[in-house]
Amino acid sequence: MGMISEFKEFIARGNVVDLAVGVVIGAAFGKIVTALVDGIVMPVIGYLSGGVSVSDWKYVLKPSQLDAAGKEVAAEVAVKYGMFLQTAIDFVLIAFVIFIVLKGYNKLRKPADAAPAATPEDVLLLREIRDSLKK
Image 1 (tube, rainbow, N blue to C red):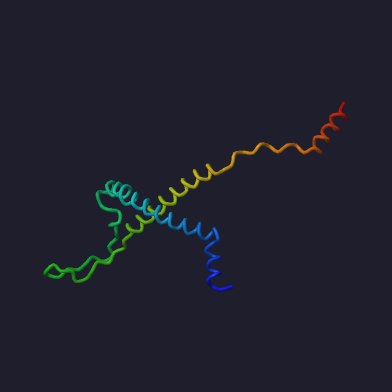
Image 2: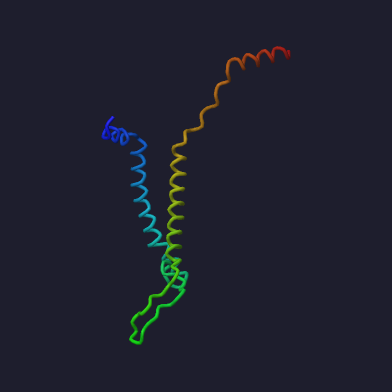
């Protein structure tokens, strides 16, 4: 079997195509939630925290040094935890929305409860025998 025919067989499997569709939809969905976080959630958090953008939050280890003319001689050294926090909030919101969507999807997909299975004939016969022995 040649490499091209193996590749065709690999691509033709439903799992690969489903995975590709899932990745593309997931990437687009991620962009939507990122826009929600960047455009709505983070400005509210920034407003509540005094008007500072969350992505600008940082802990300065060493401030920048300026010369007499006001030019920066050495850049500041800072831990930018705000960017991490914004990305973490983005991730949590994406995971939550995906959870809600999948929960609704699974509820729609779940088959209706099947009627209880009919009692087997041998059990019915044994019940009749039991009842007749009681009399």
